Length: 193
Image 1 (cartoon, rainbow, N blue to C red):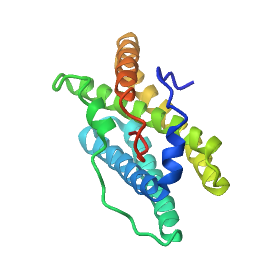
Image 2 (image 1 turned 120 degrees about the horizontal axis):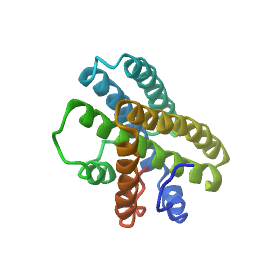
Image 3 (image 1 turned 90 degrees about the horizontal axis):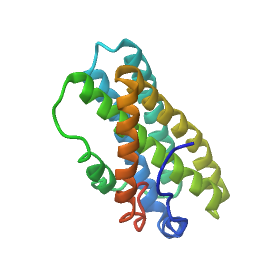
């Protein structure tokens, strides 16, 4: 369903299980960044009314997820750690050239967002199926369902605002590029790394 070209190595879950506090901190910041992305799209592309309506709802939902993850951190007797650079996202955004029309920029941002959500969904599925902590596994199952909806929404908007055939080609090329990135990731206690 997600179209990812390289699945996450299941051994990544072992890294996560040994570093639950780290993954929760990274996950909290991922949710915060997802909310920021939605707000950024509102600010950058206010003329796209349907998109704006969805981004308003998404920013609220993502901040709700941030709160859920933060609450889990607090319940574990911890505090939210410091944010770190997301090497996955930094590598991903190098794919499309800078510039182009406003519509091209929008489509590229929507495709990046779709792919980040798809990879998050795939990773959350793995956690929901493999974590020994069944409560945390159930938590990730619920978030997996949500991420799948986000992925399809962003892809739908990219196809709606761009030329469908061209968008589909860019999406396929981005998936191939992302698979190359993933060959060097999956060894850290981060959602994407």
